Length: 187
Ligand SMILES: CC(C)(COP(=O)(O)OP(=O)(O)OC[C@H]1O[C@@H](n2cnc3c(N)ncnc32)[C@H](O)[C@@H]1OP(=O)(O)O)[C@@H](O)C(=O)NCCC(=O)NCCS
Image (cartoon, rainbow, N blue to C red):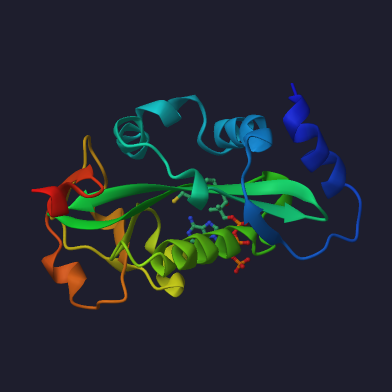
């Protein structure tokens, strides 16, 4: 059954022509849409995913929670979680999802690019980490982290751990369990 928050996305997709995606900060009014979108994109098993476990321990940053819109209708979402690894502060990207009716219009890559740009422009984190497909994120500047270096609170496919950093040497040095943002600088 279609939930109310997704009815606008389905209705808008049926009305050509659709404009280019745009991005804005999420507000509490978007909560139901984001919940429903993540359920569609990741299914009931999403709460068992390791990335979700990270977000249970460390809260997402609402200032880095973005919504993609087409013709003013929400169609995609991305979250960012401040973390640290081995005493180096950074951010964990995800989940990233676009409503199935709006895929292949650039919303996903726009969301990923913009949330990375916003996070890095703060100047307090040195990387963006994620678990995802290299084929999708590689063109956005993500590289593979050597297997086993970053310890997640659960199993991850080690070939899918990807990093974006302005410092090209960081990917070879980053090592340790995922901890709270600021953990390194406080110790
Ligand atoms: C992955 C996802 C966010 C992409 O959203 P989108 O708005 O369609 O993305 P874009 O329009 O920016 O990019 C689409 C392109 O990426 C490709 N693509 C999509 N998923 C991909 C993947 N997992 N690996 C490689 N390429 C992928 C598409 O085939 C398309 O290619 P094209 O432009 O050559 O046609 C969307 O498919 C989704 O929500 N999937 C389910 C949730 C998910 O897997 N999230 C990512 C977690 S890592």
